[in-house]
Length: 104
Image (cartoon, rainbow, N blue to C red; front, side):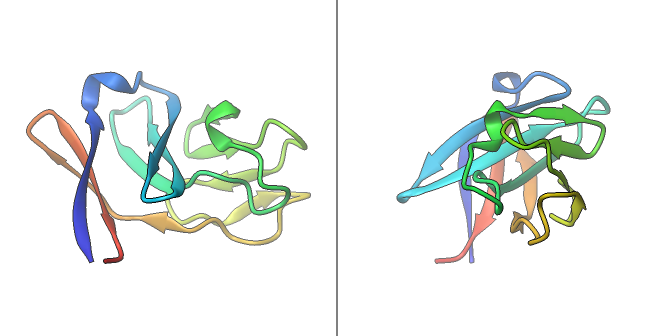
């Protein structure tokens, strides 16, 4: 596992999600209203839609296609039609940058 630099803290507004691509993979980076940061795979497990186009409310990301929801803290599905968990990744803040831990 390795810590990978992603974006500056200021690149993500509170209560927002952005897309971040790295190594041929798409991720979603989240910032909650209390300034906590989270990361997950960037595509919904139901139909592969980009979660960065979804709505973040508290700790739930809502897929923009069928309104399924995941908990961004652990990837747990919270509303149908999603039923397969979303892979999440450890996040840390280093200075003013966000890093996520990814497999080598």
